[in-house]
Length: 190
Length: 199
Image (cartoon, helix red, strand yellow):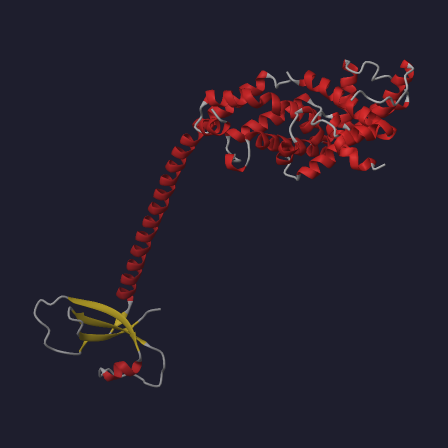
């Protein structure tokens, strides 16, 4: 007897998947265990068939359909609406950020400029010392505040204590061509 | 119109396409979920989740990778297993079912007196629910939904041999659960328990 060998075939036979081979039929005539197994499986198949027929008409309630249709329509509308609001929100945020930055930056520049002017006006300065001559009449000039080593000021003929290492603030009058025309030492108040 | 074409239309919000697909598959999905969970309300939730997934295109059906039947069974199976895992109360109900089946069998109750009766079906349903999910799903797919081994294997993402062995084991367990009542019925009839079935 090789009953385990036939089990799968008996199962398929009970499920009416295919006809049994003559070898299996012969085996079933002599093996009560396999007959019992086949019988139980056939009865099970019959019972499952009845259950299957009873369940054929089972379906979800109409409220499921309603909910799904509502979800379908909501989904249909949602992307366009959310896209519009996303765009609107992005534009708004961008304008707020740009506006804030512009206001902050202009205020900052203004305050820096005021501070610098106030500083320049409050500082004590020496008289300008001419550096070069030949300035063209009406040439636009610009005052540039720089920090120079004391040795550089000595080179310009301004007497400085070379031993001290810190830099000295000076105003240089520069022409349009970049040539320095005059220099003065600034004694900063702070 | 194929399911793939219907899905494309559904994703553009086409209601008639959705209803067409829903009417084709709602019973199948609901029955499967019901037979897996034993609860109508849970099965309705699962059915809703399956179709919501199709509407919201969270998963894509690719016709070149398999047929729609396997795809939708696979989705319904995943939702059913997730619902079974999540719903602890269900486990309690299942335990009651298991105890009820055991006590009926032990007490020599007669649920199989009318093999094709309502009571038999209810008893069988309880027995199916008492099977471990891996056996239950193949019994439901192969025996109740009449899927081939190949289709069932595609639906549960496993090998055909695994489906066969699980079905074999699942049906053996079912037969074992039903056997005491079956023997009681045969004793009542006075017949021999093991007659050669008509071939």
